[in-house]
Length: 241
Image 1 (tube, rainbow, N blue to C red):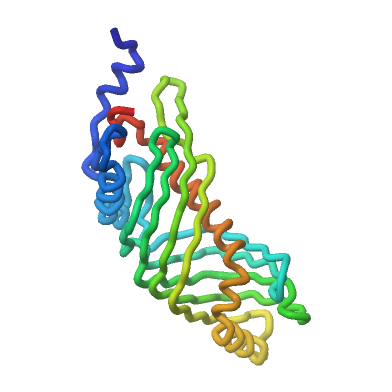
Image 2: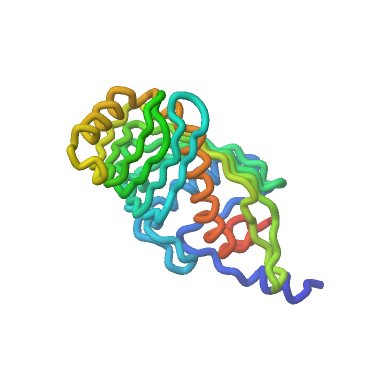
């Protein structure tokens, strides 16, 4: 005999943007890959019933990156950020441990364009740097990986959800291009020198800043994804959970 909470779980309807997968399915990785790729057009337009905005363009209020080692010892604040190109993702692989709610994803993005406001304070080599203004960046052929560590969560109605406890992100870029418009250094000499430095040393800068960038991006997307997962009962996307 089922209790009231179980009966309520059984009445959940699967929305059109979800392809349900079953924990018992030996091909569950392929099923989840289809599900994530199936989501793409819905993420482009946004999913109102779980309050997920469009990911293209993706708007980020604030990202903070701090790097305290190496040649770049800086604190960078990015705000009013808009990123375009996220809806062109392709999930290339998924490895899921659905018993423990851990999911590893690999995905590709052909082109990502980012713009917004920035503030940088710190040291580049031995030189103090203070800069503030507008920035633009283009990243091509992005290979990315994400590891989701989740756990089961029950709300006050005893409905079960997956909650993300930890999210790790890593990425690799084939090409990149940067541009900044510095509003502090009005002579433009420093601003232009910074543009030249950024583009001449793009690979080294990205390598130096990757740990800080990975942490900042993961922190943002952990909140973003939890806001969605905590509105999707497990029974919706894992019916035999």
